[in-house]
Length: 221
Image 1: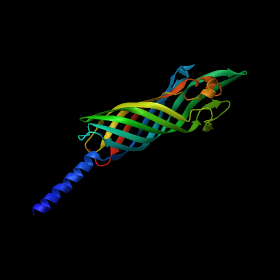
Image 2: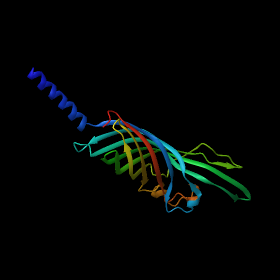
Image 3: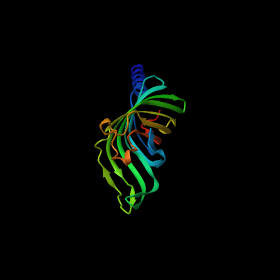
């Protein structure tokens, strides 16, 4: 009988230890409110654009009480900007332009996370890879919508940072707000003086994104 009790206690201790120290996998998805930042030639030209993000997470507790942990994530993120509606003359023709430009990234944030009761705070570096660009700008009398923009001349790899705050529940559901931005410019150095991209307005541009995100960690706290 004592042996059975000892084995039961040992088994329960092992389960609890594994739950406290092992990684917790999860999923995350939500909305992006994105625009451009930096030394823009005409920042009034760019408006906030709604996008989305979705992906997987893993949380690795560092302290036994899960007060401090490391959380890498792998996300697909749609960001960019909306063109402020504008009219202008080109060679005697009146041009109207309006629409949005979408940048699609694969992102890997590596976040240090502090759990202070139901609140959590997170911050850390983020690496991003540009998958593609789509221009949904409508221009009349010339109509150009849904065109793919070549990523040549763009920085395919972006190094940036992420920081946020949120609320987590014991059942593993969380909701938060996160801000991300890049350290490097959208255009690479070889293309820094080019006027190909929006008349040169992007030469010093960086991404700026507010993320409103929902997550679920399997197993809860």
